[in-house]
Length: 110
Length: 111
Image (cartoon, rainbow over all chains, first blue to last red; front, side):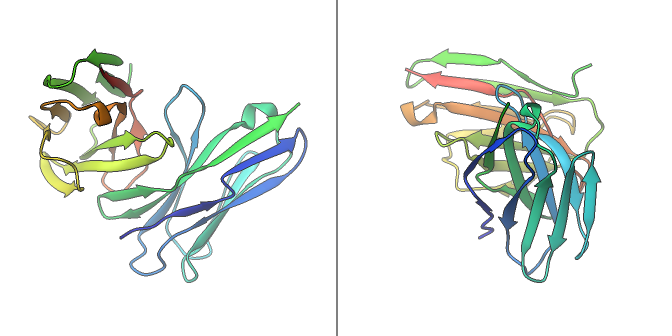
């Protein structure tokens, strides 16, 4: 069973705050870890695909790190803006099987 | 052009009916998926197809049958609809092991 856990479930921050959240996944048989951003009334959109232990990826103010040996990934948002408000999903890939976590719902208050 | 399109966007039907949701992708991807978004907004995988071949078939009732006529299409047919089938269903595709591209979802309401 591929259990993907995300924490916290939800997060409220002020505009300008930096924040981070966690995804934990099975550390055996690792293939890839994905991060998605899901805005209300839209579809999830891919942020990062991470495959190597120690990977760090960055897109603007958002970055992610990966530790495959201990089975976790962090997503960081620097200087949060109201437009960052969304649910952030991580997903564990094993071949053609993609299992999603329940997501972290981020609300950024102006 | 829409990359992954699913139709209809909304589907309201009565218990016991049979319905289909269509999904098409024009990205040339080999793998397509169906996910169900449950009441807690959790995305749960139902099926995964690679080049028209079924790869993943989660513990989904037999009333749900995916059909892939070619690698650009993965349709979902549901027989004898039940109240508990009400949910948003998302189709997605990916290049073999790359990121998923999602359709806009189909909100199914069974009355």
